[in-house]
Image 1: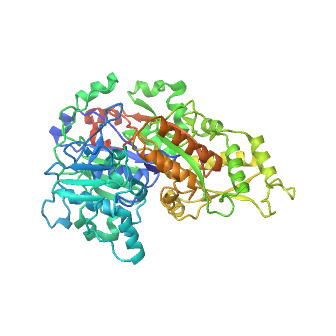
Image 2: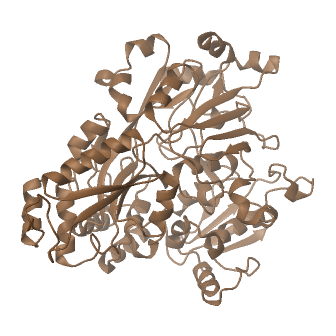
Length: 602
């Protein structure tokens, strides 16, 4: 699961087919040019959580498993593992055997010697997530999985204020031999295998690197993936280059159903991965410069800004001008969830008493999801009903939980009933005790965020609630959110597995301070969450997930807005681009047709 600014483009990716022979023969270095719409935070698999940094990490570090880039339905395949893991019948023991001979990229931490990836590196990497020193934002992923003994070890460190002991043996994750490690869980987890494909937080790091760079590790990613970090200008530019020590991996995907994509893939088949030599990522926060950069050929790929959705594809078809140039359009229903949260510890919008619940529910009822999708997303989204996202177990667009109900009359009735009245006649409601009522919603300063703020202001004004906005850059807002200092904020989470368990984890009490930004804590909800985690997919699990969804509608710690329909544009010199619903590791599988690119850019 990756957190991102839901009104900004995510990571750009690209795809191309090269008359690679000519580029390679001439010795020309092939560069993929893409952009992020929001700044990164850093590149340590244990520490970061956001979509943008995770995209870099997915290309620098390796989890044991990965997704087949082209397969639909999605399919897990070995990555550094020699095969898919052995899983016990009760889904509590997962044994992973690694391929021998995989090397970390060269780094001074290794003293000039090649450094092989071994089982102990994954054991160390998993333990780092539990080390309080690193304040891992992804702790909730492994903590919820309940690895035997690891939470106890973490609690002992917290209580004693001593350093985390990485050498102590823990049954939850242990080395069996040089290339084999085993994970033991306290309870069944039929879907834990998906976690083994997450480079955030399971990307393998070497202990020597962490010890060398210490608190500067966010700027020194050293992994075994297809690329390595060559340059980083914070919030401005990130450059990756081919990792010369990357293992032998050959482009050999089964042909997809798209004839155009299949033809392009034939030119890539049998080539060594990665196909490009360099990836240049620029941070372009405003939509217009991103669009112009693509139009002028400075970007090879564009995750279409939502403001340009109807321009790019009027009536759902690629605009004729773009089609004549050979630009390719990819449209993907996204397994993501755009939401706003209410800080349940905030004295105004938080709490579990009837009047506080009524205020949050009134705000929700006053929010017009369909109008928001029309005005802000240009129709490229669908209203959200629950934490169950498209393309995952239990997803059913016909099931209505009430989350996206729009009823301003009902909202006003709730506010009136619970004492939120306009006592002084200024047009704004006060709190039941007569004190001012001013909602404060956090937002980044981009143009599209300003527009969505105005929509929010209009919806709240219609029911008599005054709303103001705290403006700051995304990384700063993320810090404030994790610290619990914001009243309300909006962003999105994107799934990285074909299941919605992690979305339900956003409201799980023990996840407060990491994924649970709302700091919601309700025993009945936590029990349902824990129950559905251990059940296999089926009617019983679906019932538990729906019951949990109804509790979220009743208490409204989160307002779930929508699931996006994502548009991607690929330049004509790009071949093979296909958005994967659950992973951002795609730059290794794309190529640039240098001849065509040179002709069309000139």
